Amino acid sequence: METMESIRERRSVREYTGEPVSSEELDRLLQAARWAPSGLNNQPWRFMKVTDRSLIDGLSELTKYRGVVSGAEALIAVFLDHQEMYDRTKDLQSSGAALQNMLLAAHDMGLGACWLGEILNRREEAEELLGVSGDLEMVAVVALGRPVARERAGVRHPMEDLLIPPPTR
Image (cartoon, rainbow, N blue to C red; front, top):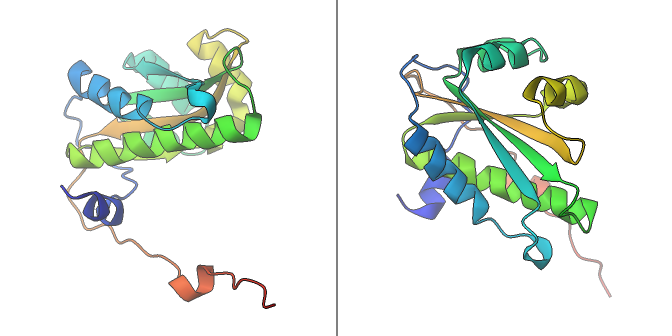
């Protein structure tokens, strides 16, 4: 699949068929994520594959998007490792790049994925449930599964609404 085609066609998928996602597929997504750029190449992200149904259900209770989480076959929790950080803004940006790599790879592999951030409203509870150390800060959860077949529209603002003109001199 061509890069621009993947970027244009990728959609957040919130409904899954129930078919399993293999450990090898999760590993492939994490390989894509780890190749994201980071400032000073510090690679401040850490990942947790969540496939245990009790953990998935527990995390689903911590977000208003519980149906998306509980319907997923697997989750990938994404964390910033405070031991590896050097600049919070840049490290959050590079975590976003790792997330985007993962989402594009999922689309390329025929998987459905949804980047969930609202769960961060209960981040401490989610971190406790997952048993992570205080050096790890959850920044997102990605829900994964085989997508239910249906049309998913992608709407974007017109480019002219997004461009800020440079100052005139």
